[in-house]
Amino acid sequence: MRLSTSPIENDVPNKSQQARVAIVNNNTVNATVRVKVFSLDGLNVLIFDSGNLILSPDSSIESVVSEIEGGSEWEIQCSSNKGKVFFDVFGQDANQRFNVNHRIVHAEMNIT
Image (cartoon, rainbow, N blue to C red; front, side, top):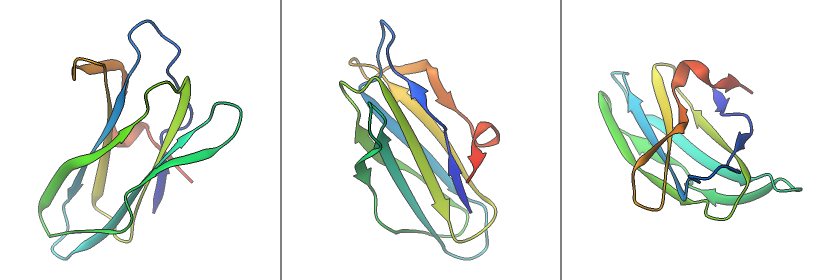
């Protein structure tokens, strides 16, 4: 399954400098997950690729971080080879505070 945040506008006074993705594997087996971040400023440019990550059963990670500083529009794509894997995306400002304008929960993401 592949999910997308769709385009996220970052042309606001309190811009996000980083994107953080929390991933939860609610399966009883390992899941392979991947996160890609694209800059959409005129062109669709891949700026981060986590590569394949193996997530153990009933575990989570929140360590996938991508620098998005300077981008006025970006998109995050998340994929998993199993169901019951949930992704949440959070933007963080220059002071590492979560940006409420850039919080996308799993249910808000689009299947691609």
